[in-house]
Image 1 (cartoon, rainbow, N blue to C red):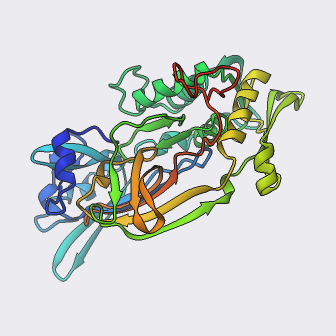
Image 2 (cartoon, rainbow, N blue to C red):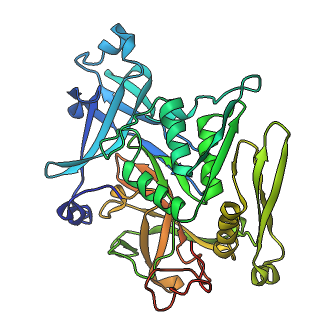
Image 3 (cartoon, rainbow, N blue to C red):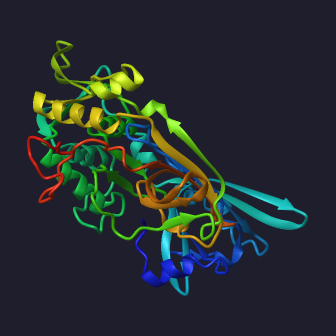
Length: 406
């Protein structure tokens, strides 16, 4: 969730309050908010191991006084960064930050307009290739915490900001640091060897091999999320039929998420083209209920270095994805906190028809119409961890050797 004040959150829940929209170009430069006609829409949908995509957006502005003719006269503005912010009572947060990719001038009914197309700030970096078949990028000389491998790819090879603090403008340092800590506690250790794969593909594989969500957010930063079970949840927003103007809500069971046998291969030799072995985990109960659903994790670009690292992942997979996940899709209008939610956020859902009462879900998809403040949210139940897991100092989940550490 984007960081805003408690007062901002309260106002966001008032359907009579419409957020102010602020557009500046280039970033830190002229404020063209008074020329906004349509601030655009974008769509994001990402599960663990999915391809990384940048969300494009088109901003429509009035060009009646030729304010934007400078884009025609100085074409070097293509590639500069623009920013869209939403706010209440003078408090704003960054909702979109990206490169200007294209410009189109247009006149409709004597109204001169300009359309500015933006792409994700991180898109150019993750589109870069790593090595080539004739000259591979060999990263087998080191053993990497997955977070450090991702950092190296994004900064050294992708050219993104390498500032190791929350001042980093390209990588969300808070989520990256938390991800690194979790990977360290689980002894995840990776190696890599690239023959022309993009950074986006490398990040997808790192996410897949750590069961994590790595994605480019519309604020222009790369985020890292590895979800672990919670016994209690902090205060999180509840979407209901009444307060959230829930519309066109539907529920489906995502069978594609089932994994009840996981084979995670480790210690690959890219020169000899062979693996040392694999770590296999089974969930017998799930296999009885749904049949054998077996998946192999054996990509030759990024891999687990040793058995313990591979086994740590295979155990988690069969305990987490043991049954079809309940997944909901719903639309909501203004008057909710949907505008400040991000992929990976926990929400609650009260849906009387299905007997949901503050049931916890996690957001995996957001489609946003920023002009009309209408959102579509796709979220998966957050109780996938239906079997034993370890929580420090817990009376019910704190027994090592009995409970799984996720």
